[in-house]
Image (cartoon, helix red, strand yellow):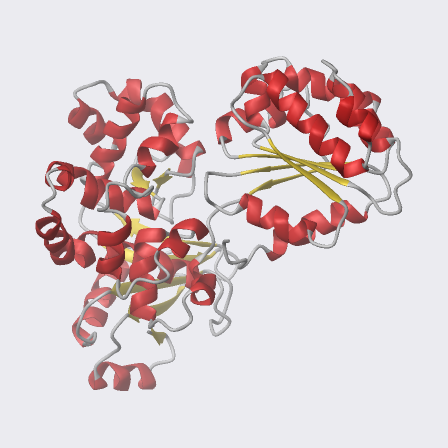
Length: 459
């Protein structure tokens, strides 16, 4: 069973809905293996709850299975022996009893019911409006197919639109909580594992008994019988019709084609043909369009670059996809050696930058709060971290180094040279500097930091 970590906000939301005297309808959705069922199991502890997992079978089979679950839940032999082709009869039976505490009804993988019968969201809307909304009951509709859950429960065209009292899109666990999964690992080891597993609890659990990251990769990913080897295929197959074009876009981005024109050239197609594909990948939390953090109108900026935000997907397309031929032939030793040589430079170093940016947002030793934190680039300059505070005209410049050795003063001097090239509030701003190094800092750099109040060192 997955370890329960983080999710304080989500638990508070569910508890708030549960404590309402009236009915409540909560939509919970998120990608596979992100911990939705674990969250609901934690919430349902010591509560009167009916949990039903819908399947991809016919509606009739699902309805009969739900009826049997409901009969056991309310202790009704009559319902157990009743044959019905109507869902509302089952729900009426559930809420008609005299409950001492608010009952919880969870339908997991709700989207499969709508897939089996496209009219089911309308059926459930009628059940909600005529039966459930009038009773002190909490209903949770949960699903792992993001696009289908949105269309069936949240979109304006859904029959259930406007009925929900709360919604939770469960995302990956931030690195801040990773140490709770792996408390005995060093920071470097935690970052290396996070670079592969991301914040997906199921992936993290799979690596928990591995001696190091490369042993974990060989055991869990290069093993063709393991679920992680084909995971990107399964993730996309459930969400999109034509997996091939989405794979090509992800492959292009993983290979460093981050501009739309570069992706189009890589795929030998027109840039306008990629709009829908990129939009879908963004909605699935697999890709992000990034602009320099100082851009005033991000949506209209022509400097947008696309990056893969799901760390496992990025790792897979960078390290596994190009080597599938060798993996299929069993040349695992050769592949793991290639991964070992390029892992830090091609993957872990980028993830470390993301970790540093996210940690900067929660630090309490800075002179102010930064409203925007990201990267900066133009034709001649790249800076790993730039953070701005509009109200106080404060800007912070940062560099991140995932080296085997410690960081020396040359990195700071180069950053000082690059800072004036960023035009934001130039001439009327306060400048700060922050250096991140996984392996510490040289004595010379520490001396400089001690003599300046605008330089922060972070390991």
